[in-house]
Length: 279
Figure 1 (tube, rainbow, N blue to C red):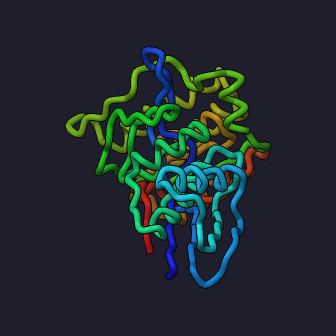
Figure 2: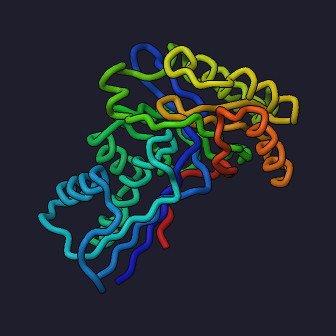
């Protein structure tokens, strides 16, 4: 028996805020993944951190099992502590793979309950894109067909401990209602980018990042649509139209990194539908 599961990470959040005393975020899944393998050909755990080990335990508890009889291995393409949903992807992938090995396919809602018992969670494992309460596991809205924007990801340095941040400051995000996206208004790409940029700007009051206005102005002058940010992390995303050629995205991103040496150009990525991929 061999099971392989992939769960995407994110480039921060498209929008994050607080409305009527409840936190929410809008997911921004990208094509970089946590990958988990389960096999009956070997034993033990490889690559699992503290949170993913706890995810395994809570999944077994949920299924009424007392032990896990298989080997499990985790590998991530996502840097930790940057706001790229690395822990959320780790937790979801471990939970999904372990349950599958034991004959159960957990729903995204079930995984969300397990994950939020560990920490505030980015629900990148839901299909499409969602607006959700990252603390209690509520889903407010689901968006199936969004334009898959291209993103140039920049790091401002250091790491942020999500659990520490939430324990110290409580709900992270400005007071604002969740965005409403209308398909018959301006282009969906522009609506998403404008909402993301407003949310990133508001987050400068809570977790300021260097070069915000300079990066935004430079990006807009090169044809980008706006910025998003990791509201409890260290990364920016420059949002580009889905039809922008990758060569231009990379060229302009490298140009920005030269102009703003405080920023580290990490990678380019594409927004994708979230979800759990079983292989």
